[in-house]
Length: 219
Image (cartoon, rainbow, N blue to C red):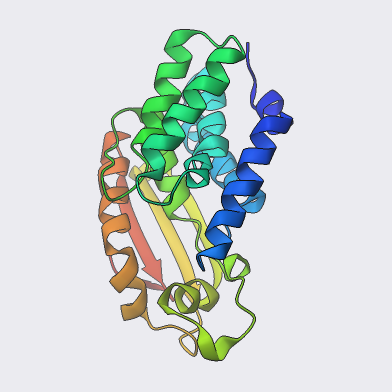
C-alpha cells in the first residue's frame, strides 16, 4: 500500500510542493510549503484517529493533507481542483487502489472555501486541519509597515490549537491574538467563509465547531 511516509519522501511530490510555494510567494501569499502541509497532514490524521476511524482512513487523510496544495503550482485560482487532478496522477502511477485514490481526490478537490464541501470524513478532516493553520511563522514579509490583512491576521496569532473534546462532541479552535498587529474583526473579515466551512466539516464528523479567541468564545 502507498503510505504517508512514502508520499512524504517522494522527490516529485516534494518538488511540486516547493515550486507551488514559490509561485505563491511571488504573488505575496503566506507560507504554503512543507511546514504547512505537514501540519495539515498531522492534524487531519489526529482528528480521524481521535474519532476512532480505522488506521487506513487516518493514513489517507494524512496523504490528502500533504498533497492538498500542490495545485497552486498550476494557479491559485481553482487550485483545489487542479491539485486533485495532479494527486490522481501521482497516486495512480504509484499503484494506489482506485477506492483510496477516490477518497483522497474528493477531499483535495473540496478543501477550498470557494467551492468545497465536506463530502466525506477525510474531506471534513482536511478542511478543519487546513483552515485552522493560522500562525505567525507563516508570514514571509519582514516589513511590518507593509503588512496586508492576511499578514496582519497571521502575524497576530501568537498561539493556536485545534482540539477535540470527545465527551462534549466538540472540536475547538483556540487562538491567542496580539491585537497590536491585527484585530479580531480583521480575522473575521478574511476567515468568516473558512469558519463557516469548518462548521459544516465538524457537523459531517458528528461534532460542533467552536472558535475561541483570547479566552472568549465567538462561535
